[in-house]
Length: 260
Image 1: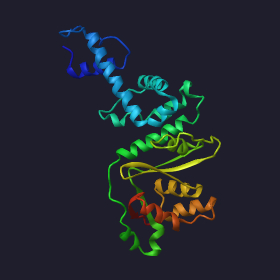
Image 2 (image 1 turned 90 degrees about the vertical axis):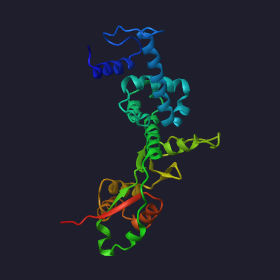
Image 3 (image 1 turned 120 degrees about the vertical axis):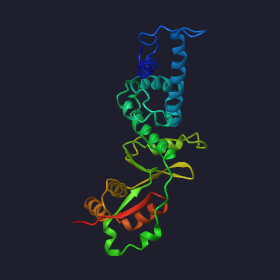
Image 4 (image 1 turned 30 degrees about the vertical axis):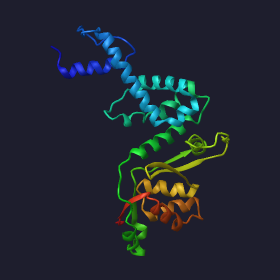
């Protein structure tokens, strides 16, 4: 008799095929053949994955249309079957998949739009954490400020695109005007994705702000990030950016990283 774990593996692999029964299986159900029963499971499985993708990428579906989105989802599911029991985890690879998806090449901004939507999706489901203790931050001696390292809230992410993906995203939100115009030649879009009152938020950043926050995200101290940013942006002033980010919940904690 085949071990149960191997049977489950065969069952899982069979769901990923468009038709056919499990290898070596011959049992019948009361009303259906095994192949017909598998088709029922397979259709439900694909429907659930497609619904998960539509939930994570609603703007993408609006931009390309439902029919094309279903085609995209089918090709994506064939290349990237689900590996998690949590459907909210499914779809992380779609932005990279779009880079090589021939049918989408006429809309070159789609991969970056999908990356933005995935960041918003992650922001919505990210765990809650207490905001940065501003009183504790105010007690840090001035001569130690440069040695501070900050941790971002789990809902936050940085994203840069050559396309105006923020404008596209905003134009497809509920209640947005229908007569919008998107200038695809608007230039770089630098974003901080976060969450406020249970909804994903987008904050557009200037080039120096984005660079500084990128260094902070990479583990640089306040002093290191500021020095690196000033090399290419001599007018940069973290004195206005840091309080703004601290107040809007971007950071959750800080540590002192003493240099040896």
